[in-house]
Length: 590
Image 1 (cartoon, rainbow, N blue to C red):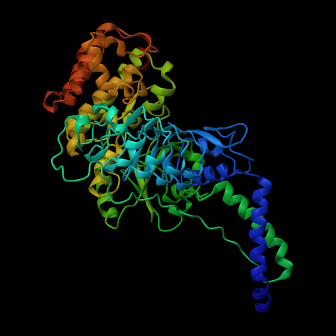
Image 2 (image 1 turned 180 degrees about the vertical axis):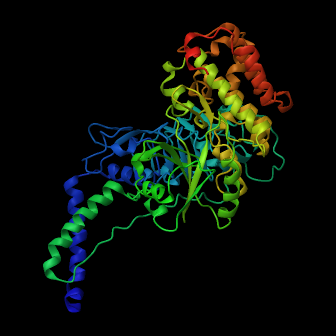
Image 3 (image 1 turned 90 degrees about the vertical axis):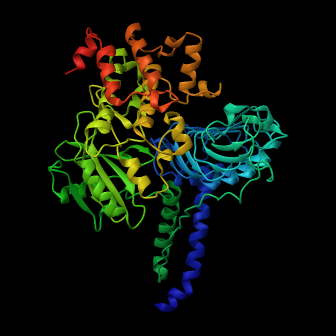
């Protein structure tokens, strides 16, 4: 038998590999399709868009977000913006060398921007804003001579702006604002046409573009620090089983066939979902009897969760929908362990968070302690997030409903600031962290998590976890969170609720503004009422003026001028929540 294994192992392996190649040819997926499949396998979570990318298709031209040249079948446009995609961007994106537009903005991408993008020399538009990219801006982007738009704003990029960008002569839109860039802005080239708005929110930058003198002129302007780190590719391996007998040859060939197919279909994704996390050494911790189930029942349910159950993703982790046999539904937030000291510190703090109960806070029921992660179990709210309601179902939110949401969020945050023990600074107030029940009652979620992860010196810092449009100016400069920085974020949230626009809406960016800058502009024109969402029904001018006045105080550039959250609630109750509410408001109130 040993002789047979030695004799046939090599030929079987060769046969398998040949069969894989034949499978690829039969399926006919183009090279661009292969690159996109590899891109997909790096994605940890999404809103489901990428499930429709089928590797068995002859080309990717029918996949959502993908546009091809109809003659060549080459990908020319990739638009995946605002689809809750989380993970690093694969270096294979550089193989799309006929790509003209790449739009990945408003997602949760992290890691470095792949330098391989420099191979996409046909690129005219590169939109990477509002993600969590770190590292430096690749010098290779300077190879994109046809580039007209480059937007990497609202990320966590560091280092200096590469001098290679001065050669992008076709550049008409350029934005690196709200990062951690430093050093002189390269001059005598394409960047000279851009003013302060393109560079705001980078405390270390200097140069004539922003009227900021550089302290040390000895260095080369805009010199790039030691090369940017490439995205590490977690290459998967195709495991081939070879038999020791000639009679098993057909079986081996069949296994190879399906192995190739499954590798192409699922890539590096873990089709077992959370089973690995909870199958060995996991335990359940319940707070104050909040989970009326045995640990065995919960663990059994956790093992069944997979990508199909994902309902959200963000800077803190992936969120799953956990439905128990009795019909009760919970939300499960998966947070990866970060270091050896994570357990003791995190469990002590979770015990505190689990003891905090309030009508306007999302209740933490307990958690699963697994060898690789923490699985936090929260109440599930059927209304989803405020972000989804505002930007996908805004027609359901009339004026009184929006005021009710603002009030609920204010009361939840006021409780964290003033009444719970210990007092908590949220650090990440934004519309995706305000959840809604079936009656559009608001609950504040994710409180305490930013502090926990930052204290553990994780790669997820408070600033990275938040969205830059919500962060107070002094927070951007110092990274120090206070109650006043929460209040600024709440003020931005109020403006988002009444306007229906995201804090860094594209219409603001074109003018070098965010939602606060837009409000300030409207005030100077005495047109502040124009901020209201045109789709919002039942707006009353008196309450609108009161809400705007309160929001203006909250987003003051001077922290001392911002009210406390207790004062915010008092103002809302006395000046905004009118004594004669609409019928809709009556039906949804207590």
